[in-house]
Amino acid sequence: MESIVHLRAAVALIGRFPALAGADLDVDHGEIVLLRGPNGAGKTTLLRVCAGLVSVSSGTAMVLGEDLVRNRAAVRRRVGMLGHATFLYEDLTVTENIDFWARAAGATVPDGRAALDRLGVASRLWSLPVSALSAGQRRRVSFASMLCRRPELWLLDEPHAGLDSDGRDVIDDLMREAASVGATVLFASHELDRAGGVAHRSVTISGGVTVPDAESFDSVGIADLADEVAP
Image 1 (cartoon, rainbow, N blue to C red):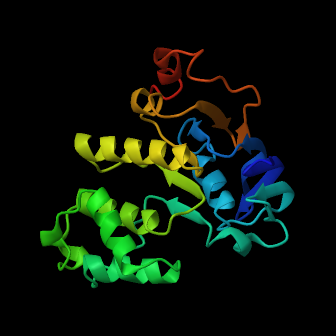
Image 2 (cartoon, rainbow, N blue to C red):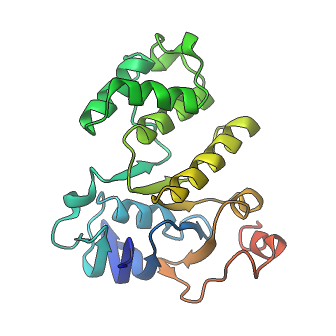
Image 3 (cartoon, rainbow, N blue to C red):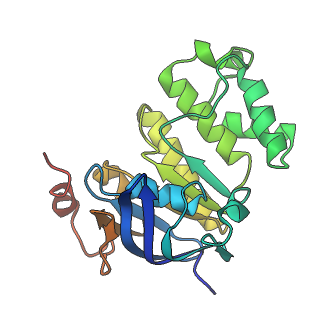
């Protein structure tokens, strides 16, 4: 089976700066892979490349069998990207936001409600505008809007940010469930203690370049990984 993500010498420019400077990466069907590395290493850019949001100026970038160098828009309906921004409409209610994103992806209203339930968004909040929610509640709604689309590839940038312990546990469970039914998860996180409990393996990125011989969490200690992000 071909890789879900296949990058070779991939270069992506932000302005004239090479945010990716020759990244190599393979992620297989059903894997949960952690991207680790310091701030500014290129983790977010790599995720955005895989989502078809940032163009690849040279190299190879195949995602879900699509050539992103030729047509990066081809994968957008098949991936779910959760970044630092919520991509929610502040003046719309929770359900209006979920309904919009569900319809855009060909999902149903019940799919959206089920996603809100799964993320633990209390029904008393559904009729409120997003602007009235706390940061953690917005994060849960944003994740629900991605979940109801049932993406084949999950691209998560610091997925635990802004959530309490229960919310973080829900996210971990969802990543495991997604992989168990055939989806693939690629996520960036600095929370290595937690990430080590859910990821199958990790890949280091620094200076826009991936480390080719990334180790699995079975063979490397969390204390060793923490050294990479220590101030």
